[in-house]
Length: 145
Image (tube, rainbow, N blue to C red):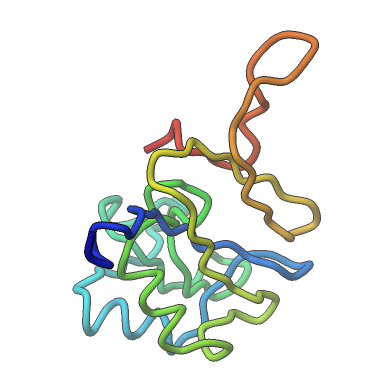
């Protein structure tokens, strides 16, 4: 067998490993816009997104300025290959103000759940819990994909 045949297929999930919460730096967000075609939106007068299909918000909510991923707590966002690539490429420079981002790699056939405590996220393999029932879904999980 060749090395490629031996290689196990994997999936990547971007998580935050510091108290505070997930967030990307302006540099990382700019790369997603410039190199990957992510679109930006602002808020309308009612506080809704002008373009609900955009991936990034860049505007004032009336309370503060936001420049961030819109769905950063969604499995479909955190598993995007371009997000993992930008985080790996920039290293610490990808981190937002209160974040320490990490790309977690696990076998592609595993179901998973991300749990969170005060902003620190942990990826866990999804399994049954006893007594009875499914493992709690946490912040987001592979079922959401």
